[in-house]
Length: 369
Length: 197
Image 1 (cartoon, chains in turn purple, brown):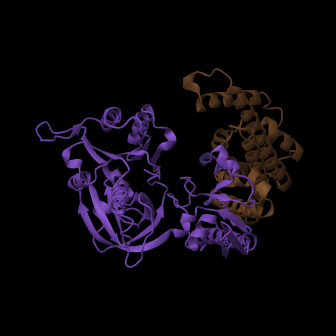
Image 2 (cartoon, chains in turn orange, brown):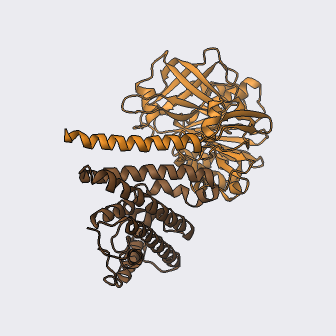
Image 3 (tube, helix red, strand yellow):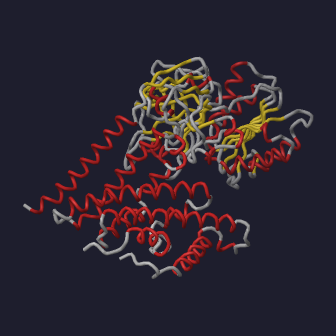
């Protein structure tokens, strides 16, 4: 019988220590009910002891977070008005000096111990978690799928250019659910559906799931709208540059402008691709170009097939952009840059645009790509 | 058999002549990674000292009244680690509740030192060398203070090194390890003056 003593002792010791931890957790970690006061307008009562981010999510207020509260993305920033102690070392790497002065905090690192006053963008009240159903999946190129989600009676209110978080359930070897951000390519007026353009990234968790596992009629959770990418209300010339699935926000913005009769604004849309098979929505955008005098669509191929009959622009999108700004656009008009694509493309376009006198603060893009 | 060493001798020996870090090279990972600035080094040193003193007492009790009577000495690694992990967990929750200021200074380092080998090392030394309770407490506290002293010294040297012309290939961990080597040599000068076993 002696062999049973060892497991019993280990089990008993672990049980005792576990019980001590549970008791301490119950007594010490019990902060009672706390009130979260948001923007001085809305107050919620939740159980204390949890993190601000998860407590807000349990009350259907979703602060954008790409990592799901592990403190590794720095996205869930919000301003805390009441005193919750100094910034934690886990927050500081994500904060600028001004943000620290304004007491901007990471919602996933703030533990609710007492009543708290916070400020979040009013838009976040608008954010919903929607159970949608896949209406259609269509290949628009060899590696980009256009997926339309039916919101099943719910609606989504957003400005063209916003993004949603797609909730990817556990699949294959992935044991936990993850979220990824995608810009909506559907128009705000079609508020009963959400259309996303999703390019297959080799090894990508969400893109692999969408391309290889997702079927029509599947149920998918979407959270949104998020973001601040949008058309700015000025009369400056809009210089838009996109590559690949970066098409999405511009499709939404351009069709929204056309639908609302916003024809006076000068809009240039440069779309970069490698070969003809990477181009999509070509006919639709050319039609829009013909119908709308101030809109100019410039697709460009960096590696056109020598005998493929391509008669559009060729070369790197940055070179084409540089040439057009210098030769085709009115020099006396202010310009604004709108970018969507890979971080490398955004950096390169930033250089071309600032080199041509567009100030950095008038170049807009989403940072989640 | 309990060794015949005055507990206070043990206390000073564990700080200077048999420094847990510089003579036994235990607890190196957090020593190297958190020694970039004095404030964090201070917090971590305090945390190690508190946890060492607390867990070695608990482990001594478990050793004396559970493991030895039941002849389960071979389980000591697992048992010591479980006790350390649980103690750290409870300590973190209590500090978070009682003193937010102390939590800022010390609490955030606690999860880091659950797996610090200096903590387990002291528990094992206490068993191998047959210390009694008083000896264990003073040896553990002294080891913690010695670790604290060493990390403060390293943090101070690293601050000076910022302005030193370090060859490019040795920047970062390279020069840190060389620095630690020199510090260890300096501490070895004390060795043999006091006996720990």
